[in-house]
Length: 276
Ligand SMILES: [Zn+2]
Image (cartoon, rainbow, N blue to C red; front, top):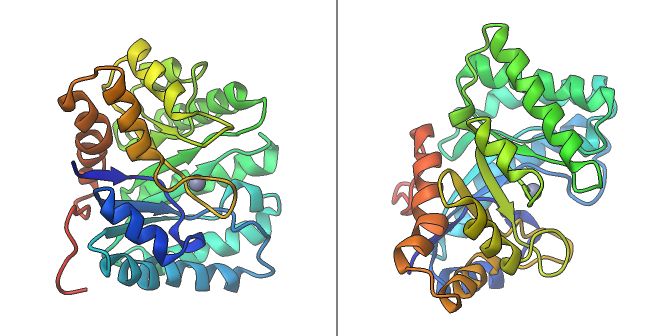
């Protein structure tokens, strides 16, 4: 059964991972820009990173029959210096016309600071101006609920101020038991990040589907440079199968839902484009 991993940081993974994902049925991925595990020393470091996300990774993924897409931003962890962050945001537009760019992400909050909030607003403004979709990161710390609410309030305020943002084109990621309801009730899409031990496990994700249904929600591995599992999505599907969920339900959360949301960009593909 084919699946989509809509949030995975392949720049930190080996080609063996691409191969294992392809064997498990992965046909398409999206890779948000994120913190690389270290702070870049200059905005130019982001120029190189965006080049990798829009050129190197799509080629690497294509070798395994996986269609690669990306989201661009400066992540909240490196947004504490607003001057630096704005220089990075100024670089983004020259990459926005690359064929695998879906929108702005993963933006959001990490420590819920004032500077992070300012840079979140700047990213939202760029997304609204260019009519782009948005992928949002919510804090992994104990302040996840507070941060999620701050993000939703910031988006609501932008919309009140005539911004073209539409919650139906915004995915709020890393939701857990205590944040998923408010995100869905706000009209947003919700993503669950599956980690081997910390954050949301495949078992907890299956529980959340059972509690909150399968509308406007997806699962992803967020595989990165730390302890994480690029096969988390097929493992969650296996957990759902074991619990007796219908094949149709499993396909909905691991393929149909991400395809429906991502297709709003007009650039999302589940097959590698031969011209690349
Ligand atoms: Zn991420």
